[in-house]
Image (cartoon, rainbow, N blue to C red; front, side, top):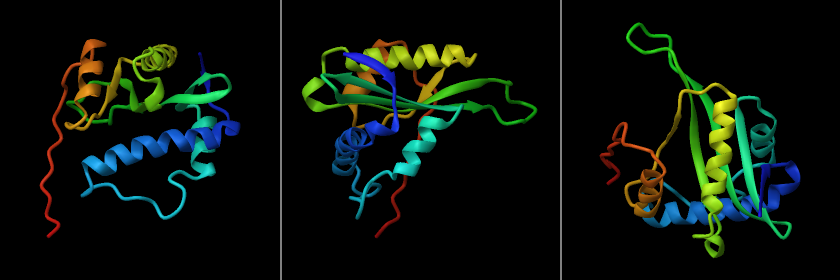
Length: 158
């Protein structure tokens, strides 16, 4: 397995992986997520991720197939008197294909994100994980992440 920066040639393989995580979210939060009528992410969206200086899209590849991805971007604290000046990397997704889970693919991707965050002089890495995703919560906790905030939701859709 190799970890590398994504290229636009990875587009079809990336869509397969996004489809897995999108389905997982749809099944667990149908009040928030829907099945897209077309493709879930346009080639322009992926191209912007790949070509931005403040975003990165890493892939895990085995036998010329994309088996995982990590998507992250740089964030700076707002200019506000009580907020410490800092910047961090927001880890938006780490996704590993079902058949490749528990083979250190996620850890290799997280390591690559960590190295990228350090290269950007980031103060840390933040992420959001849904409460239903207990496997991810355990994984991130084992890897040194701690609760920072809690996002709560009141569904008003009748």
